[in-house]
Image 1 (tube, protein in one colour):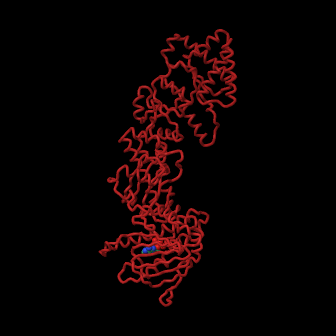
Image 2 (cartoon, protein in one colour; image 1 turned 90 degrees about the vertical axis):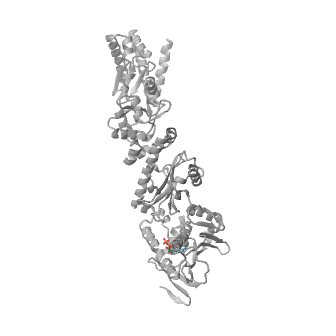
Image 3 (cartoon, helix red, strand yellow; image 1 turned 90 degrees about the horizontal axis):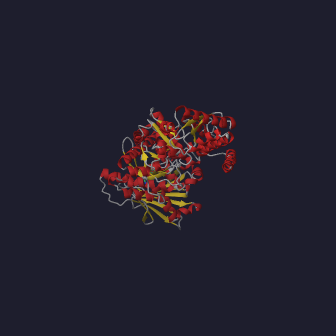
Length: 618
Ligand code: ADP
C-alpha cells in the first residue's frame, strides 16, 4: 500500500479487481460523456456538504457557490472546479484511493453476468473514476474547509498507481484536472461541453459555469410550490423541454415527501403521428441531476406517452435497468402516477366539460387501457368515461345515454365500429331517433366486454347485431294488407329467399327473417349475433379463424320495400326466374353495405347487375 517518498506519497489504489482501467476505457465507451455528470455532481455534492456545515456550525461563509468547467486547449486539459468542502489528504486516501471503487466492483460483477447487455454498462456510473474514460491522467488539487488544512495534490495516470503530495493551495474546494486522451479532444470544444452540461446538469441547484456563462436553471419549475406557478409557466417549461411539441393537454405537478420523496411535473402531450407512444418520454432526475430518459419502469404502461420530469431523490444516481425492475419504490412511483392521472382526469371532467371533451378525443384509448389494467384507476375515472354519439358527434357518458333511451332500449347500448361500412344501419337507427355511440378503436372491443363484466345489467350491441322492435313497423304492415294475407306474403318471400340463398347460393347457416321496417328504402340487411361476432373477432385477433362473416348470419328482408313487394308480382306473373335474380341481388346489396366483397363475390355481383339492367330494358 502507501509508502512515503520524501513529501510525495505513492501507492496502489486499493481495489480487488486488477483490470478495472481497461474495462472503464473500453466498455463505457458508448455513454462516456457521463464522466462530466459524475464530476459535476460530485462538485455540487461537495458544495451542499459545505452549505450544510456552514449552517450547522455557523461558519459564516458567504461565498457565491459555483462549479466551473474550464478549458485549456493548449494543455489539452479540462478542469472542474468547485468551492465546496474540499478534502484533506486522509479523505483523499479514504474516498478516492479506496472507497470510490465500491460501485466499480459492483459494476464488474454485473458486467461478468450480463456481458451482452450493453445497456446496463451505460447506466452504471463509476463516480469519480469515470474520468478515466476520457483522460489518461487525472489530477486532484484540493483544500479542505477545515482549519489549518493543507492543500493536497493527487495524481494518477490510468493505472492503479497514484501519487499524493502536499501543495500550497489558497482557495478552499476541489479542482479535478483531466488530461484528455488524444481522441477525446471533442471535450475541449465549448459547444460539445455545453450540450453535455445541458443534458445532464441543466437543472442542478448550484450555478454551473462554462467559461463565464451560467448554463443551468437552478430552480426548475418542479422545485416550486404548485400554488405559486401559473399555467403559462408550466407551458413555457414544457416548451423548453420539448421545443417542437404542441401545447400539452394537461399536466400534474407532483410534490410528495411522504411516504417517499417524489417531485416533478408530468405532461400529457398532444399526440401527433410522429409521436412514438411505445417509448417512455419522462426524464428522470435524482436531486436535479439528470439520470435517464429511458425509464419505462417508472411509468404505468398505459401512460407511456407522459412527458416531463420526475425527481426521485431516493433512487440512486447510477440506476441500471435491472435495478429499476426490482425496486419496490419504482412500483410505488408507478402507482402514484396512475392515481394522480386518474384524479386529474376526474377533476378536468368536472371542471369544464367542453375542454374535457377536447382532451378526451386524444386521451381516451389510454384511459380505456388504464381501466383494463388497473382497477383503482378504473374506479376513479369510471363516471367520466365519454362516448361519441352519432348525434352531431356529441359526447355522452353511459348514464345519460341510457336515461335518454330508457323507453326504447332498456340497458342496451347500440354502437357502430365503423361509420362508413355500417352507414345503412346507422341511418335506420337514426331515422327512428335511436342514439348510437361510436366505438372505432382497437381497444374498444375489449373495453366494452370489460364494462359488461363490471355492470351485469348492461349490454352493448353493434347496430348490425339485431333489430329492435321499434324499428319494425307493425302498424304499417297491417295497414297494407290485413291478417292472413300478410302472413301469406311473408311466407312467399321467405320461400323465395330460402330457395335462392340456401339452395342456389349454398348459404346453409343463414337465417332468413322477414319484417316490415319503418324505413322503406332498405331492401334487406345482414345481421350478426353480437356474441358470436365478438367471439369470431377475438379468434381473428389471435390469428385464428378466417376473415369472413361468421357462418351464422341473418338476412333481414324488408317487406315494406318496393323492390321486395315487386318480387311477389313477378312471381304472380310467372317470372320466377327473374324474381330469383333480384332476390340474389338484394342479398348481395345487403352484403355490400355490410362489409364489401372479395373478388369472386364482386364478379358475380357485377354479372348479375348487368343481367338486371337487361331485364329492365325488356
Ligand atoms: P460517490 O460520489 O458515489 O461517493 P465518487 O467516486 O464519485 O463516488 O466519489 C467518492 C468520494 O470522493 C465522494 O463520496 C466524496 O467524498 C469525494 N469527492 C469526490 N469528488 C469530490 C469533490 N469535488 N469535493 C469533495 N469531495 C469529493
